[in-house]
Length: 405
Image (tube, rainbow, N blue to C red; front, side):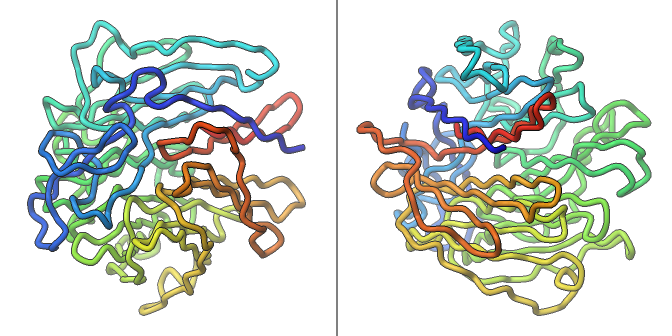
Protein backbone atom coordinates (compact mmCIF):
# COMPACT_ATOMS: atom_id res chain seq x y z
CA UNK A 1 0.00 0.00 0.00
CA UNK A 2 1.36 3.40 -0.97
CA UNK A 3 0.94 6.42 1.24
CA UNK A 4 1.80 9.98 0.36
CA UNK A 5 3.43 11.92 3.17
CA UNK A 6 2.60 15.60 2.90
CA UNK A 7 5.11 17.89 4.55
CA UNK A 8 5.28 21.61 4.08
CA UNK A 9 8.44 23.43 5.07
CA UNK A 10 8.33 27.20 5.22
CA UNK A 11 10.68 29.32 3.16
CA UNK A 12 14.16 28.79 4.54
CA UNK A 13 12.69 26.35 7.11
CA UNK A 14 12.48 29.18 9.56
CA UNK A 15 16.08 30.06 8.75
CA UNK A 16 15.30 32.07 5.59
CA UNK A 17 17.73 33.95 3.37
CA UNK A 18 20.48 31.95 1.74
CA UNK A 19 19.20 28.64 3.03
CA UNK A 20 16.94 28.56 -0.01
CA UNK A 21 19.39 29.48 -2.76
CA UNK A 22 22.77 28.94 -4.31
CA UNK A 23 24.74 30.22 -7.28
CA UNK A 24 27.39 29.01 -9.69
CA UNK A 25 30.16 31.36 -10.73
CA UNK A 26 31.08 30.41 -14.30
CA UNK A 27 34.11 32.66 -14.69
CA UNK A 28 35.42 30.61 -17.60
CA UNK A 29 32.20 30.64 -19.60
CA UNK A 30 32.17 32.06 -23.10
CA UNK A 31 28.40 31.89 -23.34
CA UNK A 32 26.55 35.15 -23.84
CA UNK A 33 24.43 34.43 -20.80
CA UNK A 34 27.31 33.63 -18.49
CA UNK A 35 28.20 35.62 -15.43
CA UNK A 36 28.03 35.66 -11.71
CA UNK A 37 25.02 36.20 -9.58
CA UNK A 38 23.23 35.38 -6.40
CA UNK A 39 19.82 33.99 -5.77
CA UNK A 40 17.16 35.74 -3.79
CA UNK A 41 15.27 34.09 -0.95
CA UNK A 42 12.92 32.48 -3.46
CA UNK A 43 15.78 30.84 -5.35
CA UNK A 44 15.81 33.10 -8.41
CA UNK A 45 18.72 35.13 -9.66
CA UNK A 46 20.17 38.56 -9.01
CA UNK A 47 23.24 39.76 -10.89
CA UNK A 48 25.61 40.46 -8.05
CA UNK A 49 28.74 38.71 -6.93
CA UNK A 50 29.10 36.40 -3.98
CA UNK A 51 30.73 33.11 -3.18
CA UNK A 52 27.64 30.92 -3.37
CA UNK A 53 27.71 27.91 -5.67
CA UNK A 54 24.88 26.57 -7.75
CA UNK A 55 23.41 28.97 -10.31
CA UNK A 56 24.13 28.67 -14.02
CA UNK A 57 24.23 32.27 -15.13
CA UNK A 58 22.75 35.73 -14.86
CA UNK A 59 20.43 35.75 -17.85
CA UNK A 60 16.67 35.94 -17.10
CA UNK A 61 16.10 32.81 -19.15
CA UNK A 62 18.22 30.89 -16.66
CA UNK A 63 16.30 32.01 -13.58
CA UNK A 64 15.00 28.93 -11.84
CA UNK A 65 14.38 27.62 -8.36
CA UNK A 66 16.74 24.77 -7.56
CA UNK A 67 16.77 22.10 -4.89
CA UNK A 68 17.77 23.46 -1.48
CA UNK A 69 16.70 20.54 0.74
CA UNK A 70 18.18 17.08 1.02
CA UNK A 71 16.66 14.06 2.72
CA UNK A 72 17.55 10.44 3.37
CA UNK A 73 16.22 7.61 5.53
CA UNK A 74 18.23 5.60 8.06
CA UNK A 75 17.00 3.32 10.84
CA UNK A 76 13.34 4.22 10.17
CA UNK A 77 14.12 7.92 10.58
CA UNK A 78 13.85 10.64 7.98
CA UNK A 79 16.84 13.01 8.10
CA UNK A 80 16.47 16.42 6.42
CA UNK A 81 19.26 18.90 5.73
CA UNK A 82 19.46 22.53 4.56
CA UNK A 83 21.80 25.51 4.70
CA UNK A 84 20.84 28.09 7.30
CA UNK A 85 20.90 31.86 7.21
CA UNK A 86 24.23 31.65 9.07
CA UNK A 87 25.58 29.50 6.16
CA UNK A 88 25.90 26.51 8.50
CA UNK A 89 24.30 23.16 7.75
CA UNK A 90 21.13 22.48 9.75
CA UNK A 91 19.18 19.27 10.10
CA UNK A 92 16.25 17.58 11.75
CA UNK A 93 15.15 13.96 12.02
CA UNK A 94 11.69 12.43 12.25
CA UNK A 95 10.45 8.85 12.39
CA UNK A 96 9.14 7.71 9.02
CA UNK A 97 5.68 7.37 10.58
CA UNK A 98 5.96 10.94 11.90
CA UNK A 99 2.38 11.81 10.97
CA UNK A 100 1.11 9.27 13.50
CA UNK A 101 3.79 10.03 16.09
CA UNK A 102 3.33 13.82 15.84
CA UNK A 103 7.01 14.26 16.55
CA UNK A 104 7.88 17.89 15.88
CA UNK A 105 11.60 18.09 16.55
CA UNK A 106 13.28 21.42 15.94
CA UNK A 107 16.00 22.08 13.43
CA UNK A 108 19.51 21.84 14.90
CA UNK A 109 22.85 23.11 13.70
CA UNK A 110 24.94 20.16 12.54
CA UNK A 111 28.23 19.94 14.45
CA UNK A 112 27.57 23.14 16.47
CA UNK A 113 31.16 23.35 17.71
CA UNK A 114 32.44 23.65 14.13
CA UNK A 115 33.21 27.04 12.57
CA UNK A 116 32.78 25.72 9.02
CA UNK A 117 30.38 27.59 6.75
CA UNK A 118 29.05 26.61 3.35
CA UNK A 119 28.53 28.13 -0.07
CA UNK A 120 25.75 25.84 -1.18
CA UNK A 121 23.12 23.37 0.02
CA UNK A 122 24.03 19.99 1.50
CA UNK A 123 23.31 16.60 -0.02
CA UNK A 124 22.97 13.42 2.03
CA UNK A 125 22.95 9.67 1.52
CA UNK A 126 22.57 6.64 3.80
CA UNK A 127 24.48 3.42 3.14
CA UNK A 128 25.63 0.11 4.66
CA UNK A 129 22.49 0.13 6.78
CA UNK A 130 24.14 2.02 9.64
CA UNK A 131 25.88 5.03 8.11
CA UNK A 132 24.84 8.44 6.79
CA UNK A 133 27.05 11.05 5.14
CA UNK A 134 26.31 14.71 4.45
CA UNK A 135 28.35 16.64 1.87
CA UNK A 136 28.48 20.39 1.26
CA UNK A 137 30.78 22.89 -0.53
CA UNK A 138 32.80 24.96 1.93
CA UNK A 139 32.55 28.75 1.65
CA UNK A 140 36.01 29.52 3.05
CA UNK A 141 37.99 26.51 1.74
CA UNK A 142 36.08 25.97 -1.54
CA UNK A 143 36.47 22.24 -0.87
CA UNK A 144 33.93 19.48 -0.39
CA UNK A 145 33.37 18.77 3.31
CA UNK A 146 31.58 15.75 4.77
CA UNK A 147 30.15 14.82 8.16
CA UNK A 148 29.41 11.21 9.10
CA UNK A 149 26.64 9.70 11.22
CA UNK A 150 27.64 6.17 12.22
CA UNK A 151 25.71 3.89 14.56
CA UNK A 152 23.71 6.80 15.94
CA UNK A 153 26.59 9.24 16.51
CA UNK A 154 27.83 12.21 14.50
CA UNK A 155 31.54 12.75 13.95
CA UNK A 156 32.97 15.74 15.81
CA UNK A 157 34.26 17.63 12.75
CA UNK A 158 33.74 18.21 9.05
CA UNK A 159 36.23 16.16 7.03
CA UNK A 160 37.89 17.96 4.10
CA UNK A 161 37.73 15.87 0.92
CA UNK A 162 39.42 18.39 -1.37
CA UNK A 163 38.26 19.43 -4.86
CA UNK A 164 37.30 23.02 -5.72
CA UNK A 165 33.55 22.69 -5.52
CA UNK A 166 31.50 24.87 -7.86
CA UNK A 167 28.26 22.95 -7.29
CA UNK A 168 26.49 20.90 -4.67
CA UNK A 169 27.63 17.27 -4.54
CA UNK A 170 25.77 14.60 -6.51
CA UNK A 171 25.72 11.19 -4.83
CA UNK A 172 25.03 7.60 -5.79
CA UNK A 173 25.40 4.14 -4.32
CA UNK A 174 27.55 1.75 -6.34
CA UNK A 175 26.07 -1.73 -5.85
CA UNK A 176 28.26 -4.49 -4.45
CA UNK A 177 29.96 -6.41 -7.25
CA UNK A 178 30.14 -3.53 -9.72
CA UNK A 179 33.86 -3.27 -8.97
CA UNK A 180 36.00 -5.24 -6.52
CA UNK A 181 34.08 -4.36 -3.35
CA UNK A 182 31.65 -6.88 -1.89
CA UNK A 183 29.70 -4.06 -0.17
CA UNK A 184 27.74 -1.10 -1.49
CA UNK A 185 29.82 2.07 -1.59
CA UNK A 186 29.05 5.73 -2.16
CA UNK A 187 30.54 7.91 -4.90
CA UNK A 188 30.58 11.72 -5.05
CA UNK A 189 30.46 13.92 -8.16
CA UNK A 190 30.91 17.68 -8.26
CA UNK A 191 31.72 20.51 -10.66
CA UNK A 192 35.31 21.61 -10.09
CA UNK A 193 36.24 25.25 -10.75
CA UNK A 194 39.93 24.33 -11.10
CA UNK A 195 39.17 21.86 -13.89
CA UNK A 196 37.37 24.19 -16.33
CA UNK A 197 34.08 23.60 -14.52
CA UNK A 198 34.07 19.96 -15.50
CA UNK A 199 32.89 17.02 -13.39
CA UNK A 200 35.29 15.34 -10.96
CA UNK A 201 34.69 12.16 -9.00
CA UNK A 202 35.59 10.62 -5.64
CA UNK A 203 34.44 7.54 -3.73
CA UNK A 204 34.78 5.45 -0.61
CA UNK A 205 37.83 3.21 -0.31
CA UNK A 206 37.06 0.18 1.86
CA UNK A 207 40.72 -0.86 2.07
CA UNK A 208 41.62 2.48 3.65
CA UNK A 209 38.29 2.93 5.46
CA UNK A 210 38.20 6.46 4.12
CA UNK A 211 37.32 8.39 1.01
CA UNK A 212 39.61 7.67 -1.91
CA UNK A 213 42.44 8.54 -2.36
CA UNK A 214 43.22 9.17 1.33
CA UNK A 215 45.20 10.91 2.56
CA UNK A 216 45.81 12.97 -0.62
CA UNK A 217 42.15 13.89 -1.02
CA UNK A 218 42.88 16.66 -3.51
CA UNK A 219 43.45 14.04 -6.21
CA UNK A 220 39.92 13.53 -7.45
CA UNK A 221 39.33 11.63 -10.69
CA UNK A 222 39.29 14.23 -13.48
CA UNK A 223 38.54 11.85 -16.36
CA UNK A 224 35.11 13.46 -16.91
CA UNK A 225 36.28 17.09 -16.61
CA UNK A 226 36.73 17.68 -20.35
CA UNK A 227 33.31 19.34 -20.70
CA UNK A 228 32.37 22.59 -18.99
CA UNK A 229 29.05 22.14 -17.25
CA UNK A 230 26.29 24.65 -16.55
CA UNK A 231 24.61 22.44 -13.96
CA UNK A 232 25.07 20.19 -11.02
CA UNK A 233 25.67 16.68 -12.43
CA UNK A 234 23.11 13.90 -12.28
CA UNK A 235 24.57 10.42 -11.78
CA UNK A 236 23.18 6.89 -11.90
CA UNK A 237 25.16 3.90 -10.61
CA UNK A 238 24.53 0.27 -11.57
CA UNK A 239 25.95 -3.18 -10.89
CA UNK A 240 26.22 -4.00 -14.59
CA UNK A 241 27.02 -1.90 -17.64
CA UNK A 242 26.71 0.94 -17.83
CA UNK A 243 28.22 1.17 -14.32
CA UNK A 244 27.85 4.96 -14.42
CA UNK A 245 25.54 7.19 -16.44
CA UNK A 246 26.52 10.87 -16.08
CA UNK A 247 24.29 13.75 -17.22
CA UNK A 248 24.95 17.51 -17.28
CA UNK A 249 23.70 20.58 -19.09
CA UNK A 250 26.49 21.91 -21.29
CA UNK A 251 27.83 25.35 -20.43
CA UNK A 252 27.83 26.80 -23.93
CA UNK A 253 24.43 25.63 -25.23
CA UNK A 254 22.51 24.39 -22.14
CA UNK A 255 21.76 21.18 -24.07
CA UNK A 256 21.71 17.83 -22.30
CA UNK A 257 24.97 15.88 -22.47
CA UNK A 258 25.44 12.25 -21.41
CA UNK A 259 28.26 9.74 -21.17
CA UNK A 260 28.63 6.28 -19.66
CA UNK A 261 31.33 4.25 -17.96
CA UNK A 262 31.48 0.66 -19.20
CA UNK A 263 33.10 -1.89 -16.95
CA UNK A 264 33.59 -4.33 -19.83
CA UNK A 265 36.08 -1.98 -21.49
CA UNK A 266 37.10 -0.01 -18.38
CA UNK A 267 36.44 3.21 -20.28
CA UNK A 268 34.05 6.13 -20.69
CA UNK A 269 32.05 6.70 -23.83
CA UNK A 270 32.35 10.09 -25.51
CA UNK A 271 29.97 12.84 -24.50
CA UNK A 272 26.74 12.65 -26.51
CA UNK A 273 24.65 15.76 -27.12
CA UNK A 274 20.98 14.86 -26.68
CA UNK A 275 19.72 18.33 -27.53
CA UNK A 276 17.23 20.58 -25.84
CA UNK A 277 17.78 23.92 -24.11
CA UNK A 278 17.55 23.60 -20.35
CA UNK A 279 17.99 25.59 -17.16
CA UNK A 280 18.71 24.42 -13.65
CA UNK A 281 19.92 20.86 -13.13
CA UNK A 282 19.14 17.51 -14.79
CA UNK A 283 17.21 14.88 -12.85
CA UNK A 284 17.43 11.14 -13.54
CA UNK A 285 15.94 8.15 -11.71
CA UNK A 286 16.40 4.43 -12.30
CA UNK A 287 13.33 2.42 -13.25
CA UNK A 288 12.56 -1.29 -13.54
CA UNK A 289 15.51 -2.42 -11.48
CA UNK A 290 18.02 -0.28 -13.38
CA UNK A 291 17.03 -1.57 -16.82
CA UNK A 292 15.84 1.94 -17.70
CA UNK A 293 16.08 5.44 -16.38
CA UNK A 294 13.83 8.47 -16.70
CA UNK A 295 15.32 11.90 -17.39
CA UNK A 296 13.59 15.15 -16.41
CA UNK A 297 14.65 18.70 -17.17
CA UNK A 298 13.04 22.14 -17.18
CA UNK A 299 13.42 23.87 -20.52
CA UNK A 300 14.07 27.56 -20.99
CA UNK A 301 10.44 27.73 -22.15
CA UNK A 302 9.28 26.63 -18.68
CA UNK A 303 8.14 23.19 -19.87
CA UNK A 304 9.43 19.99 -18.26
CA UNK A 305 10.77 17.46 -20.76
CA UNK A 306 11.38 13.78 -20.20
CA UNK A 307 12.53 10.63 -21.95
CA UNK A 308 13.11 6.97 -21.09
CA UNK A 309 16.57 5.55 -21.65
CA UNK A 310 16.98 1.77 -21.86
CA UNK A 311 20.35 0.68 -20.53
CA UNK A 312 22.31 -1.77 -22.63
CA UNK A 313 22.52 -1.15 -26.36
CA UNK A 314 21.41 2.47 -26.10
CA UNK A 315 24.36 3.19 -23.80
CA UNK A 316 26.81 2.17 -26.51
CA UNK A 317 24.96 3.17 -29.71
CA UNK A 318 26.81 6.14 -31.20
CA UNK A 319 24.47 8.94 -32.21
CA UNK A 320 21.42 7.57 -30.41
CA UNK A 321 19.07 10.35 -29.34
CA UNK A 322 15.85 9.51 -27.46
CA UNK A 323 12.67 11.42 -28.18
CA UNK A 324 11.98 14.23 -25.71
CA UNK A 325 8.41 14.19 -24.41
CA UNK A 326 6.77 17.37 -23.13
CA UNK A 327 4.91 17.22 -19.83
CA UNK A 328 3.39 20.60 -20.71
CA UNK A 329 2.68 23.19 -18.03
CA UNK A 330 4.71 26.24 -17.01
CA UNK A 331 7.29 25.58 -14.30
CA UNK A 332 9.63 27.76 -12.28
CA UNK A 333 11.74 25.06 -10.56
CA UNK A 334 13.77 21.99 -11.30
CA UNK A 335 11.67 18.84 -11.00
CA UNK A 336 11.98 16.11 -8.38
CA UNK A 337 11.19 12.49 -9.17
CA UNK A 338 10.81 9.27 -7.20
CA UNK A 339 10.22 5.67 -8.24
CA UNK A 340 8.08 3.22 -6.31
CA UNK A 341 8.38 -0.39 -7.37
CA UNK A 342 6.95 -3.47 -5.69
CA UNK A 343 7.21 -7.16 -6.52
CA UNK A 344 5.02 -8.09 -9.47
CA UNK A 345 4.40 -4.42 -10.29
CA UNK A 346 5.74 -2.41 -13.21
CA UNK A 347 6.30 0.48 -10.84
CA UNK A 348 5.43 4.14 -10.91
CA UNK A 349 7.40 7.34 -11.42
CA UNK A 350 6.09 10.44 -9.65
CA UNK A 351 7.43 13.85 -10.61
CA UNK A 352 6.72 17.20 -8.95
CA UNK A 353 7.81 20.74 -9.68
CA UNK A 354 6.84 24.26 -8.75
CA UNK A 355 4.47 25.87 -11.19
CA UNK A 356 4.76 29.48 -12.30
CA UNK A 357 1.70 30.13 -10.13
CA UNK A 358 3.55 28.99 -6.98
CA UNK A 359 1.66 25.69 -6.67
CA UNK A 360 3.28 22.27 -6.64
CA UNK A 361 2.30 20.25 -9.72
CA UNK A 362 2.34 16.48 -9.92
CA UNK A 363 2.27 13.87 -12.68
CA UNK A 364 2.70 10.11 -12.52
CA UNK A 365 4.04 7.60 -15.06
CA UNK A 366 2.36 4.23 -14.73
CA UNK A 367 1.50 1.37 -17.08
CA UNK A 368 3.55 3.00 -19.80
CA UNK A 369 1.86 6.41 -19.85
CA UNK A 370 1.63 9.72 -18.01
CA UNK A 371 -1.44 10.68 -16.00
CA UNK A 372 -3.04 14.08 -16.15
CA UNK A 373 -1.49 17.17 -14.63
CA UNK A 374 -2.68 17.87 -11.09
CA UNK A 375 -1.89 19.93 -8.02
CA UNK A 376 -0.83 18.32 -4.79
CA UNK A 377 -1.04 21.61 -2.89
CA UNK A 378 -3.76 24.24 -3.23
CA UNK A 379 -2.91 26.30 -0.16
CA UNK A 380 -3.31 30.06 -0.38
CA UNK A 381 0.34 30.80 0.37
CA UNK A 382 2.46 30.00 -2.66
CA UNK A 383 5.62 27.93 -2.40
CA UNK A 384 8.91 29.59 -3.26
CA UNK A 385 11.44 26.74 -3.38
CA UNK A 386 11.68 23.58 -5.46
CA UNK A 387 9.82 20.63 -3.91
CA UNK A 388 11.65 17.39 -3.21
CA UNK A 389 10.49 13.81 -2.96
CA UNK A 390 11.97 11.34 -0.52
CA UNK A 391 11.30 7.63 -0.26
CA UNK A 392 11.03 5.50 2.87
CA UNK A 393 10.30 1.81 3.28
CA UNK A 394 8.57 0.75 6.47
CA UNK A 395 9.98 -2.73 6.99
CA UNK A 396 7.33 -3.79 9.50
CA UNK A 397 4.42 -3.23 7.13
CA UNK A 398 6.33 -3.20 3.83
CA UNK A 399 4.67 0.10 3.15
CA UNK A 400 6.49 2.44 0.81
CA UNK A 401 6.03 6.06 1.82
CA UNK A 402 6.77 8.92 -0.53
CA UNK A 403 7.53 12.11 1.31
CA UNK A 404 7.29 15.54 -0.28
CA UNK A 405 9.54 18.20 1.21
